[in-house]
Length: 284
Image: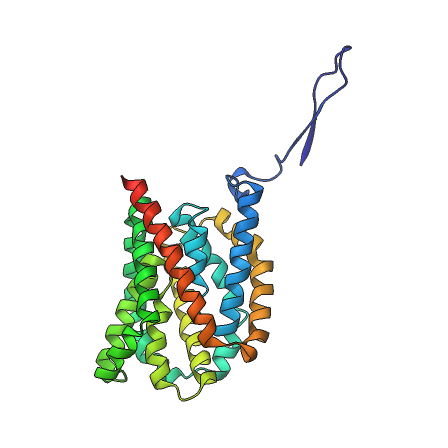
């Protein structure tokens, strides 16, 4: 920070101008947002981090939906990814202790390639069309979850078959790569069938989610989607994300999952509808 003094005049006192020349311009976080917009963004990340801590997944989709109403869609998705990497590190130990690598392995096989392909498509999409894709993906995921469409499918096919797990992982990876979130909702169907206890399901979902999150982050770096300014912004949001995840971890044992998901699905559908309206208005 530097202080510059304007030339003094006899008719007026000296003026002092405050600038931040010591901070590189390309590292100033949220340089194009107002204080109110930054406060809203902090609130979004605090609430969604609580969801991540309580249930092991479900934070990225609402973070992207509601931050996309403040930021450009590509920025919103990459910020959710970078911030998610910091926040996920807090709950990785639970996944390593309680997750089942044997259950996770078939899902991981196809997921790596699918995520890389999805991130490539994400990079090429126009912001208006990306906003529409985000809205469609989140709306379909919320509807499928609310009306148990994937559970009905699971009742008709052997969800534990390798070919089914491979196909599920491919679709989930593409969704996560393009839309930035939502893939774990598809995995949750497989895990509900394969995991005999809630603790095992939560541990395995954290394990899979962590591996794919870190992998998508590396792919985004390779594709040139992660900037130093973005990393600074993710660090700025880190304290509220850590506090939210800490609260969620302690909230988990008292959580009413059914009531939570009912309200959560409605919020996701509302947010997705707003994104669709915003996207179509942008390309019109």
